[in-house]
Length: 111
Length: 113
Image 1: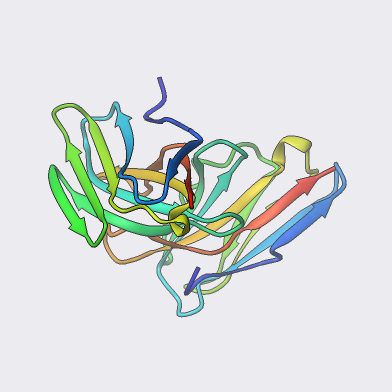
Image 2: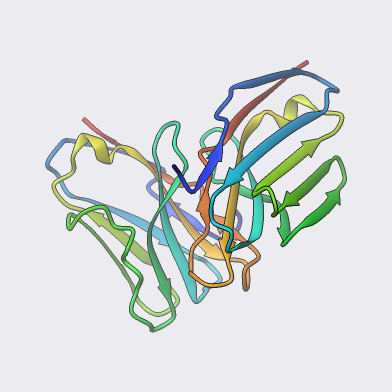
């Protein structure tokens, strides 16, 4: 079992739809949870950051962490064609130097 | 990505040749990471530099891979005797302070033919 699992997609939705992206993980020590967005031929850019459990909202984006289920989600409201990208989850414990990444979900928002 | 420059952006090399990839964290940063991203796969940790401490090389896949960094400046990742399975995007990142995630460069797309 991989340490972080993520449905690779591709996921296609119409413009304006609500998008739900998810990751599951196996390491209960993870405390820091990130979502990155990666456009084609670009490096990943940090989108959302959450520590421990709970929700965080930033504009059209909401990140949720459920540590009891080892499950994190990213919701995108009123999705736009410019949201079309690969979304990567990443996580880390209090110790250790590097983040562990999921394989990414490709999202296409169709106009 | 802003704050991290990588070169070259693309590199095509013949199997068996050596390649050198460059990362400049621009404003300088104590923590610098190299990751590899294969098509359809997640980012794979390669190596981590933290100040003057010994680098964490635990992610390097074979002894054909090596990396250097002097102080808080430029880092180079060298792949010797390249193989086709080395084809990937190699990403460099610096830590955005504490555990607040990375700033990535745009990567070097390596193709071994």
